Structure formats: C-alpha cells, structure tokens
Length: 504
Image (cartoon, rainbow, N blue to C red; front, top):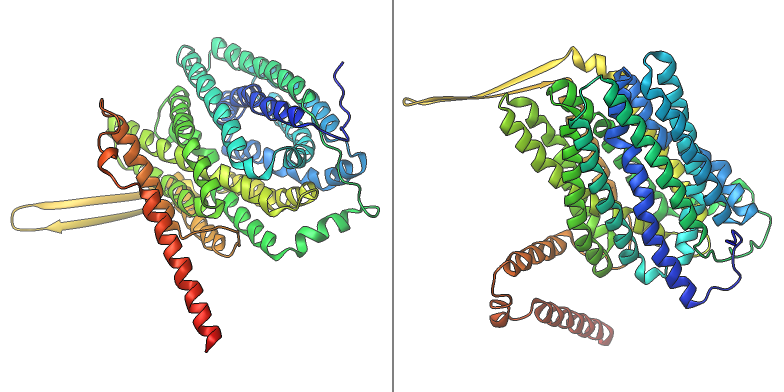
C-alpha cells in the first residue's frame, strides 16, 4: 500500500531511492507532455481551425494559470502534504486530455472552446501541483547535487521528448492534412499522453516526502509573500525572469504558424525541427550541468541566454530566401543553436531560483517567482496574437547596394508580419540580459571564462573523435593545473596587498 503522507525521518537509502524515482518519473511525464503540448498542441489547434488569437490564448494557458499559485501557497502551507497534492492534481489534470482528444473529430467554435477550456483546467491543476512539487524537490535533493540531479532528470526528459517527437513527425508525415487519419492521430497522441501521465503520478506516489518544518506562527498569504518580496536579490532575479519570459513567449509560440502558414511547410517538418532541437538539448545538458556546478548558474545564463535570443532573431533569415533547401538548412541550424542554449537557460534559471530560496521556505519563494513571471509570460502570446493582423499589413524593406565598375551587388532585407515578432523578441531579450547583471550569486565568474571553458570542452570532444585517443593530451600541460596555479597566485597577491595595507 502506497502512503501519500509525509515522513518525519528519511534515511539516506530512501533519499537515494527517491532521487532515482525522480529521474525515472521524468521519462513518463515528459513523454506525455511531448505528445500533448508545444508543436503538437499548436498543430492540433490549427487542425481545428484556430486563428492566431486562439493560438496565443492556448500558448498563454500554462502561464496565466500559474496565478492559481496564490491560493495554492496557502493550501500547501496549511495542508502540509505536498505528495498528496501532487498525485491528486496530476491524476485529475491528465484525465482532461480525454475530452481534448475527442475534439479531434469536430470543427468550429464549439470544439475549439472545449479544447481551450480543458487546456486551461489541465494547466491550472498542474500549477497547484507544481507549487507543492518544487518545494518538495528543494527539501529532498541535497543542495550540492542539485545541478547534477536536475541535469540527469532533464536529460531523460530530452531523450524521451526526442523519441516521441520523431514518432509524432512520422505519424504526421503519413497522414494528409485535414484528413480523418490525422484526426485519429491527434486523438491517439492525447490518449497516450493521458496514460503516461497517470503512470507518472504512480511513480510520484512512491517518492518519499520530508515533513515540512513547522511554522512559528499561523501563516497568511501576506506573511508568506513578505519574505521573498523583501529579498532584494530575489526581486532582481524575478525582474530578469519576467522580462526574459515575455521576450521568449512573445515569438516562440508562433514558430509553428510561421513555418506552416508563412513558409508553406507541412507540420511534420516542425516536429522534425523540434526533434533536432531536443537532440541538441540532450547533447548540451551534461556540459551545462557540469558548468553550473563548477562555476555558477548566473555565468551559464550570461552565455546561454544571448545565444538563444540570437536564434530567435535569426529566424528572420528564413523568410528572406525562396530556396527551400537553404531555408530548411537554416531552420535546422537555428533549432540546434536554440535547443543547446535553452538547455543551459532552463537548467541554470531553475537552479538559481532554488539556490536563492532558503531551506524550508522554497514553496513561498518559488511560487512568488512563478506568480510574478507567469503574468508576463502569459500576457506575451496574447499580445502577439492580437498584433498578428496589425503586423500582417506592415512591411519594411531595406536594400544595401554595392556598385563598382565590374559588378553591382544588392542585398535586400524585407521585414513583414512574423519577422517583427522575432525582432521585438530580441530587443526585449537584450533588456532582460541587462537585468541579469544585477543578480548576486555566490561563485559567479566573468562570462568570458565560461566561454573559454565551453570552447575547451568542445575542442576536447573533437580530439576524442580521433581513432587514437589521448595522443595530444599526452603532450599537453593540463589546463586545470595552470588555472589552479593562477588562482593560487592571485589569492597570495591579494593577501600580500591586504597585509601591506594593514601594516601601513
């Protein structure tokens, strides 16, 4: 019989078993999410005849429903049974996928409304469970292992998402657009997503939950929010995440619409690009996890975030060419870049929020962070959907001409419709990166040092591809030895300067 009650004491063996279950659960939950969200969710909505505004409303659901975490904070703190909340909300929310699957065989306003309401209900229950889930994980996993544990969990998620993405792309490729077969394919994916979600809830029920520390006084919403809102460093982190989420969610929810309706490709290509992005995510995760543990999460963000923003802005290049081969290649390269960089952003932003929230108070801190950022992230796609018609009627044309006695060269650049989204997203992203510099984290280094480490790891990976492994390493002075010597020298010099200043 599985107990959903918290445990007063957790042995090391139980903790290790819980961490293993935590990693294993990612395979089931991510499989269900991959089949019922993202590209597939948008493609399903387009299959039902959704407009750009409907797409924006669907994309905002996971974020606007996070506002439910306001009362969820009180529920978690007063019930103090985080496992029970996680399991119950997970089971009920996954069952919402069944009515969504049924809408695949209908068209019009009614099915779209059912689809939208079920999505909001699913995400709302997920927000309540997530409020309890994040605080539970913070108290379960040792702080010094957070980076590696979350990297392993995210790696499993990326691997399963990659597999399911490829399978879904093959299914979409084999079903004509608008056909009964495609309706059956969408319905089947959502039913499978429901089943895997229920299996995920079963695994969560087997994980141990530590008893929450007893509050010194009766808690209210005001008292819960007072601590994180009075923490200036945590508020600076919230400002960064808010602007970052708005920048990303202003444009990325419409990638599918852009590729299908503007560029004229089938939705199966979008799913293949998603699989490519997941593969890049999977490959990069190990490196980002090691770097976040070795250096700092902020240092990782200062490298990964600009790379991701560049990828969004560079999507403009896909609309500048009529060469199909070039466009597909360009989109593939950008999805590799964005997949690899978002792995670092996701891992580091999760870790830094956990790291800055005090032990035992993680629920209030993380829920406050989610509350502040979800409003911005949920507003962004709705604003994007409302502005779709406005930008559709606007165009900017720039032509750079080079004239010489031997040749004339013209480089035209035309910005229209979705191109404006990508450009505005990039500008807002730069503003977010500026605010990141104000966040304080122990152990942070200059971003150039992290870039050098990333490049060094890439060079080592390339050298390992040789059939004779380690030949060059045998003639190389280890970089860590030089780095450690440099650090020791700087420490000694600083101590001498301090002693000299004291003596004077």
